[in-house]
Image 1 (tube, rainbow, N blue to C red):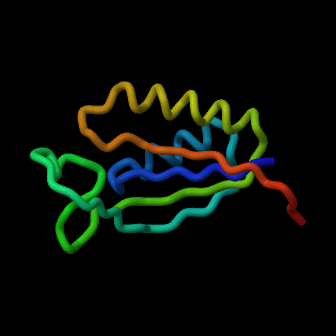
Image 2 (spheres, rainbow, N blue to C red):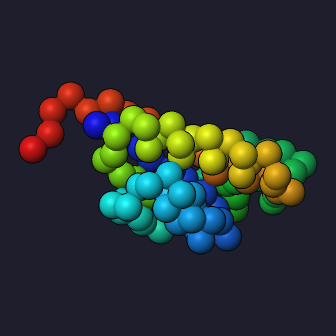
Amino acid sequence: MKLVIVTAVEQFQKDVLKLFKNANIENFSSSDIDGYKNGSSLLMTSNWFSSGKGGNESSLFFSFTDDENIDDLFNLIKEFNKNLETNNPIKAVVVPIEKFI
């Protein structure tokens, strides 16, 4: 069992839910978050994080699940990100779990 954490801008929330379903990840949690990025860029408004006072509205999802489901999810996310027209890819990380009850 591992912990998978996925972040996405708010406009991709429904897409992430579909990706979780297609990866057979049925139990998960989510939270609304604001993303920030320090620094200047010509394309700052099209990036994941906003440089203004208010952050970019985003979502965080996490699930304790099996390796095979995570592998499927990562493949689905990679495919989804290939077809994006924005500079806001869905991002995911995996954290190993040493103990759980």
